Image (cartoon, rainbow, N blue to C red; front, side, top):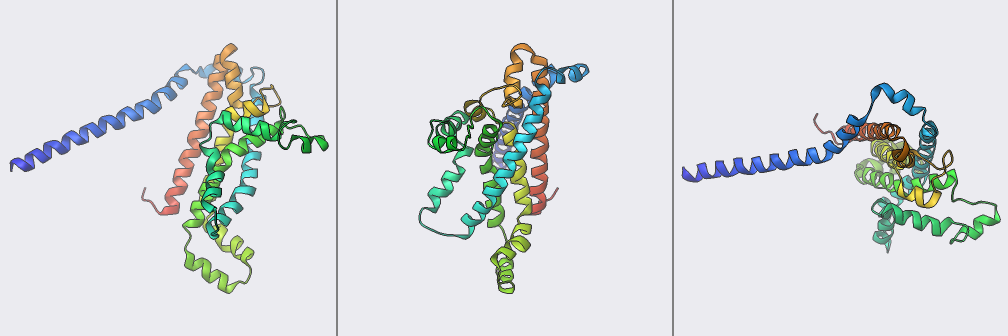
Amino acid sequence: MKSRVANSVTNKIVILIVAILVVTYFLFVTVPLLAVFLRAKPNQIGSQLETAGVIEAIKLSMITSASAAAIAFVLAVPSAYFMVTRNFHGKAVIDTLMDLPIVLPPAVAGVALLYAFAPKGLLGPVLNRFGIILPESIYAVIIAEAFVASPFLYRSAKTGFENMDRDVINSAKMLSGSRLRVFFTVTFPLSIRAIISGAMMTWARAMGEFGATLMFAGNLPGITTTMPLAIYNLLYYEPEAGVTLSIILIAISFSVLITVKLLEQKRFGAKK
């Protein structure tokens, strides 16, 4: 009897400690976000959006992040399929290198891109022959965003391909002699939720990219100043407009994450 009472008290203490940790973590994440919203002035949002460079930064971010997501889709999805369906020596190393930008410090990513594509970089002289100078251009922004964000789509697509029913795929291969046809009619549709989730995460990450863009593309208003860079500029002379842009990015990030979670629930049959 005493043992049961002691166990009951111990369980309650453990539950209480865990509850305190959960609440602490929740507040740790939400309080800074709440602080941003509390600084906003809803009646001035219209005028804040008219601040010089704000609309241009929003448009530029939309264009570059969509372009980066498209590049990631073209490159990462086939790469993920290849890595899932093929075994070869050095596969783990190559797979790790493809994932590396996801944990690479943004400043380091920017330096790497600069030394690769700058006029005096590794590939710069080749590009110069065709009159292509990437730094301080919109193309540098897109490359920086794609470089940093594409692993999100790569990882998600890999997960989708790995979780496919192999019996279905093998049956489809037996019925159709074309591997390409099987991919587009069976493999791709079965993995579409994972790919969409990864594409959305890639788009959101590209839109929020700061360090690599600043290092590689620079911070030129109307040319390379995306929303994160505009926030950095505005906080010095127009903080209210910077807060408005911050809220927009928070809302986009939240929307993407909640959509991905819903897709994941449907994909794995999780209960609501």
